[in-house]
Length: 490
Image 1 (tube, rainbow, N blue to C red):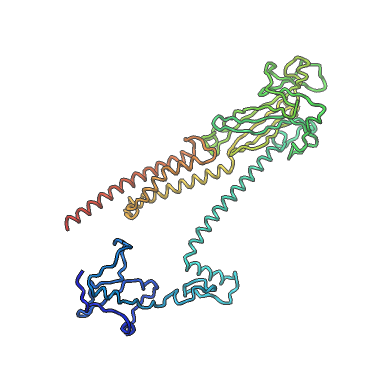
Image 2 (cartoon, helix red, strand yellow):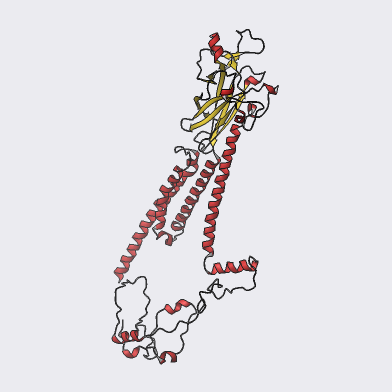
């Protein structure tokens, strides 16, 4: 820095400030913080080496809050001590009452309308301009979008919850043959029913655990709520203990003298009953029902077609009068007609549907069994969650793929120079599998969801991460080589 003499510095103070020509302001209020230009009178030329006591520190200059200012000469120090900053000129947003409660904006270009009705088009237009001038419109938009997204998620969750409730009520309603088609004559429908309480379902072992009880109801039957007309076992005078046989058939019994009706007995008399019902109100039989696939379609296969997989199975019941078996000594005789079955309770993330068929109610059927067909599927909420995660995974993958192409193929060095994009790619390698593990009831790796989403996403993101790492290393090598060459030339 060149030397500065006392004569080369012009000090503005006192009357000299008032007599000096006015400074040409640019109109923005922040221009008063720019550095002060000191003129020298050496042949009318500006001295670029003149000292500036109000020099603005740049980002490359170190800052020490405890340091004291240094000056190139005594005259420069005297000029800095004697300098008085000129008054701040008025500009947009200045010279107004900033505490005026009626003013919505500090921008003079937005005037407060008068005589405008509230909620009128002019009122909305004015407030829109006010929020835009304050730069609050963007904040308002992203806050509103977040609130709307949360509200939509809550609404969808409530709707799916109500859907699960309707499915549970449909399982508790009674229908003959699963379609409401009554036998002929309709009065053949009896009052003995089975009630199954859902306990658990294991998608891996494909076992559905249900507790079965026998109930007797009064007529007329309430098809929407069968248990509303249930008869307490303590008030029943015709209580019949039932020997329950599972997965067997009932055939006509020809070794009997009964002619009023066709009696039935268990086809295999050596099969032992799995339990007894109808003795007390606490009688129940616990069963594990093995389910298999409904279709060979890959979208419906158990676990592989998650979340659209469907499990299917059935259980057959034959109820025999245990008193008759004990009195006659003939196992499996005097089969009783069971008119139907209903299911109660629900399972987490699973929807269970059933359809019962009582062959005893139809004359053209050769047996007297109760066949219960059962289907287990994922709930609608599970399918919705999987869809959202699938879309977000592909959105993140496509975004990272586009950034890789822009930086590597189109030479966008501003993307490549930053290390944040490399951290994002590296984080995505661990974030996407973690989100996948949070899905409700998700099976092991290898389902359709992994083949179409997770595995391709991980492969693409891994390649993007490797390419970014290699390009980043090459970029640093070239930059270091260029700096070394420049230093050598100097």
